[in-house]
Length: 365
Picture (cartoon, rainbow, N blue to C red):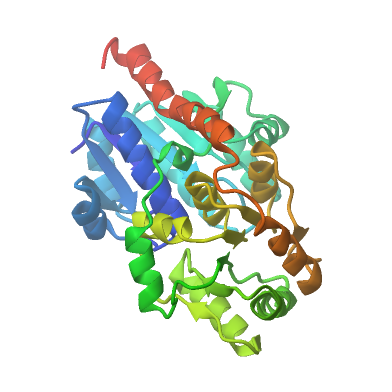
């Protein structure tokens, strides 16, 4: 079916994960020309239409079995697949795909993954057993490497790289401006974007976000827009914020393609991000950003680019957040150009390690 099979959280309308898929496919196209790719996803037909690669449904183990009979390599990633905080079961699913490939003697690689936290003993034991049989690992930050060590993964070579999305080129602002104007933006005021999500541990932070947005509209004379990185979840969070706001905000509705998200964020003067890849899109676009932390991956990325979280979701206050955004409105675009170029090169190491693995097993690509 294909030379390389890719497993990840694809086909669920999450802009961050779709950006990872796009960046991985582009990187493989550059470094492994002529190699065909199949993607295991929730919506295989859509994957085939959008990216021109083979699609396999994530629960179709028969087709996975058939694919692995001919595949030269399984890539698992990127993203935070191996953790048991947001889901108790998903870690076992992704490990089962790896284990099937290993059983069929297909070389396997963890590709730019963010590892952990893995809390439950059964999940820890399963991860240790399967991942110690992986042939090569790249992780997107030092904390992920440390988590693997804590969990007893000590056999495969492990390389610290960066999120694959950091290898994407930025998008121009034209298409994004069309989308924003269609949603009600007049283009006359500075524009502050919010990429938020629902958070099961507390709904209070949505109230603080709503009040911060109201303050910015009144005191800084800006427009605010809420951008859903995953419509199925973020649309609900935006609805709750809309109910709490006294001023009028702009709310984008529905799913958008990766390049459309990038283009929208290119038009912003500041992005306030809870979603990791909202922050990464802002960084790629040269848009000043303010990060709110709910997960170690947010802290790791902000540290990587020389930033700190404005607050955790549990502790954020409207007054402090509005103040930090006001300060960022004075920032110059593109302040992190040197860091951006450096991380782009580091991110490209992920695909170069694929090349090294193929050469190890097959002598040439």
